[in-house]
Image 1: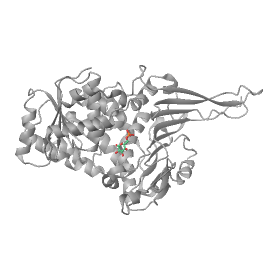
Image 2: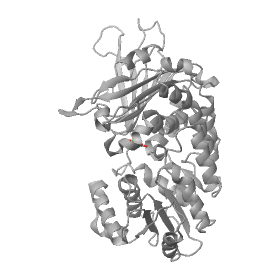
Image 3: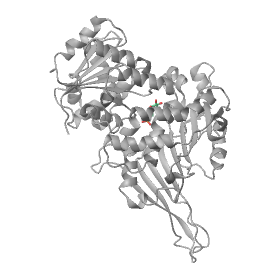
Image 4: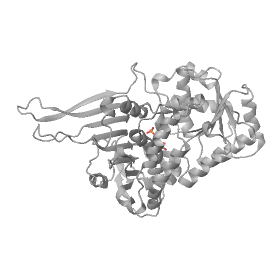
Length: 485
Ligand code: BG6
């Protein structure tokens, strides 16, 4: 599936995301033959660098971030030749630096696909778009990819969307949420709709609750300045985890086309039961990590890392309800943590117990665990007969499956798929404007109530499961956290 030739123009090309994800993703797509030979990558940023210097940085990043089986010196060499660098402040109107970009882009045919990837702070999106328009870079074959976060609340998200849409049509705008590019997240659609054993029982009639977790062992790393203005809710829940929730809860789309899937997801986001300010204390939980031990090493707490006082959460839980007939009163627990004791993203579907007099006592809950990462796959907990018991007592049995490709290759990184989908003009795995705005609208009362400090901040040691208050939180609606966090 090689794409048409393209020029990928990355704003924020010296940043962490470009080095860690974007360049390795394009390299891998070249490796598997999806990138045509005359495709080019044009990095832009404010740093004064020559193309040669930038290629050296790119090479170091590839050496560092590519998985060992994918490293190939000759291929890296071939990839680096596709890279160009232009020193440019995308927000400035100074024509001279834009001329440099023109010089590079003019080397391609005028009708070549151009992708502008904004890997910068979202406040800059409108200004960069305006300059691209002012200096005539936006062709009919151009598209723009917007990295998250789209704003910090409803108003700023609307302003950014308005701002960019003055220069790009909605079909040219690709709002990225890298969780949608994860093969395992797309497996939620496959498991639900391609398997009658799940499809037939996927509702309040049989499902007691759904837990959606994304926990990480890393702290805020070098990103404290950004993270402190964001926090766990904005960084993970408003986007990635609400997208996962939408896929779990949506009605069957008419087809897998971009609008059908996004229509189905946005209906879920709009059906989320509002959490009014007076309910935020009972329906959400926030926490910060304090000093703890990880792998026998003492690690500092969030405030020590930040070197300042802060009310930003590094852990968040929300209890959500989707007010549609299918999900009548089924709680969805959405949870995310930094500095957790292990890295795990998963969806846990707990089925209702079958009341049956046949076996003397009820069996345990059936549980479907969709392991988004790591150890990508799924587990299903069942009740089976205890083979060594003379009576008909039950015991726990488990089925396990893996999402790994059959040929033993690694699951592609989410950015690989998404970056080339933008070239292909295929928007199904990108977020539509109404989705972003609906997601902000739902989290906003919680953000405001937390910001006003009306909900206590709880704490957990780095390297632990989270704050002890989380157990009581989930128990109020009759559930327990899936142990395997
Ligand atoms: C990003 C967040 O969007 O997702 C990061 O800004 C987080 O804070 C990352 O670490 C997690 O992504 P993944 O793919 O490792 O789960």
